[in-house]
Length: 313
Image (cartoon, rainbow, N blue to C red):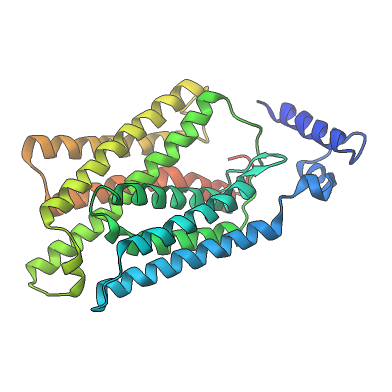
């Protein structure tokens, strides 16, 4: 869809709302401001309330997890999961008000950051029902609280676009899920590195009592990477099929970095199968792959939206 098509759609929304007879030829900002308040904005008080309720739930859950790790008081994991789930529901309602706007879908930088954090909470909650992954909440819940705050108070000059095609929708969803799952894998790698270092130094820090054995931690890490690589493959393939040119000027660096990340994670899985890579080697490859993916996922949006101030990254 061209900018002219989008302008016509926005003009049609303005006319149907009864704001003005015609806004054709006006700037995007003028057309958006001309829409009536009930059409132009979401329920801002509700959006703000759900954001701060989510932040409170995530913060309390992280605090309880920390106390469980450092104090003698044992806190049942179900309470932390319940707080995480409650915060996730509130954050989802908050994101719905931010992303689904009357002018289209707003995938600005801070909204995407919040959406990724929510996906990380969801995946960790689901995985913790079957695997010993509750320890990750000590890292993921504070991140989710911070991302919710950023999404609530910061804006980027992103121009919403109309509902995407099914192929592009699949690309967007699979990209967010792939990044989220591989981000969880990176956090798992950090905990694994910390555990390995503490055991080699023979430190008896209380946190070690709550972590699974090294073999289990490594097994969980590679499970996360396998599923994350499948989702990343789906994101790349769906993007190639739904976008006209993956190597267009504003997409080239994102595509190249995503392919580099794919190669790093694929090489790690091959090295695990062929040479039995583990420990610090697995941690380094995981973090390098995630760094490339983070630059691909966030780097372009950061430069285009916050540095170059382009509304259409």
